[in-house]
Structures are given as C-alpha cells and as structure tokens.
Image (cartoon, rainbow, N blue to C red; front, side, top):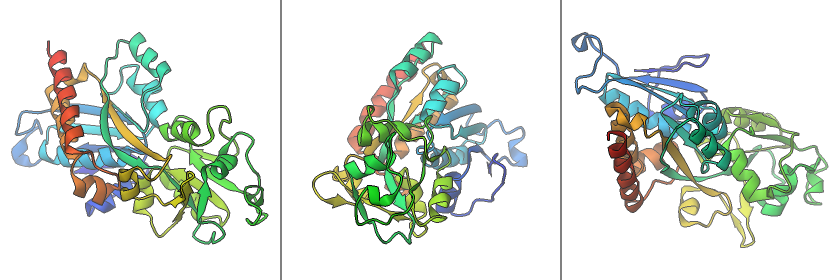
Length: 333
C-alpha cells in the first residue's frame, strides 16, 4: 500500500506509472499493507519501525521504487521519503540527526561534513546509480538541437544571456525563459561546477524549484524556454519536451543510458548517492533496507527500464556492500 502525502493521493498502477508520479510528488509515504491476520502490522518477518529519508529530487524516484518493493515485503516497516534537494536534506534533516538516509546527486560538501560532525552524525557514502543530467527545451524550439558547453554556460551564468541570439547569431531574438534546480539541490551544485564554473556563478533570473515535474511543465508552456534536471524525468516524459545534445568539444552527444554508461556524455554524466546514518544502521529494519537498496542497484529492469538511470556494476555493488556491512558491524558494537 502506498500513500502519497503530497496534496493529491494517487492509486499506483504499473511501476512505471508509480515512478513517474513519484517524481512529481514532494513526499511519498510507503508502508507495507497489512491484513487482518497481520494484527497490528508488526511484520511477519519480525522487522518493524520507521525509516525517514530526505534529499535529492533526482534520487527520489529510484529510492521510491525500491522502497515500494521493500515495504510490500516487510509489512511492519514504514518508509517516508521527502524530496528536499541534496543540500536541503543535509542541512535541514540529515546532519541534524532527523533522518536515517540522505539522497544526493553529488558528493557531500565540506560544510555539510562539518555540520554532521558538529552534531555527531556519522555516515557512509553509497553509490546508487549513474545519471545523465539533461537539458531540455520546448518541442516547438526547432532552432536548437545541440549546445556547446560554453553556450550552455552563457545561458546559465550569473551575467546570463537575455535573448537566444546572444548565445548564437542564428538563434531567434527572443527572451530566454529558464527553469532549473533550486540552490539547495545537488543538481544545481553539479551544474555550476561542471558547466559554467564557480567563478561565473548561476543566474537568479530563472524559475527555481525542487520539483522536476514543474520544470517539465514550465518548458512545455513556452517555445523559448530551457531547463535542466535528472535524466529520469525526461525518460518519463520523452514526448512532452525535447532533450538537447551537448558538445564538449568532440561533437554533439545526446543524453541516454548508453552515453552516460560509456562516459561519452560529458560533462553531465554523474554518480548518484545515498548516505545512511551509521547510528541508524544499528536498527535491524534500517540495516536490512540498506542491504536491499544496494542489491537493487544492479537491477537493470528497475534502475534502467523503470526509472531511467544506469545501474551499478556487480563490482561496484560488491564494494559498496562491504562498506555497508562494516558500518552495520560498527553500529552494533
């Protein structure tokens, strides 16, 4: 049973429908469905308790799909997932000891490490998948199919181009309408670091949001709009917007599972993470969920087919599992 605690409630059908809708929700609450025979829902396998997860909107659909499966198998475990942005999750929830996991679309930042340390929050970093950060435009924007990294930087830097023809002479003299990640987002941080660079910053002249479906809707509504977000959201909406190819100096490369996996799609291929609290891993239901999450990171049907990210390799999963088991052992000593 899945309860969406956003403003609307939905009955989920196929997994793909679930993942697409999960990407549109700010918060998802997932709990194993109980029957009369289950009594108080304590769980037939003995696992019970709450798991609270915050962080990246990019990792949100993957975590939600995996949590849905886990909750259906463990009816005593309730999982609450909030899409707060990587930085918002670290700063406001995880590093102050309020959540068990923080999802992130980039590595934890130095100031976040310090905040966790100040509050006695120990953690480990687990690789969840590989993403192809995707730049989108309106389907009617037939004047552009590919941008160089420098052109992309001109659109998004602090002193950003105001009209399209400032970026390229043959583009129309029309105002650029921008939709992108809020500055609490790991996607925002990654984009700044890998496209325009910290010294050029990021424009304030855009619609900032943690809800990637809002970016899709904004770009749909304007022929001269542009936006960026994790590939999963484009994967779920391939006919509603157009993904641009990116030229990093070796020709135009379109975002896809294949180009992200091969490393061709640069500089916008990136690792996705989740950070479990070591203290939380001392609880059996949290440790078992963390193990289950890692097991699913190589599930091609789920990670690639249903969500739209590149699965981990078997080697990566085994390395991550060793790290996790060491942390679980530490938590129980």
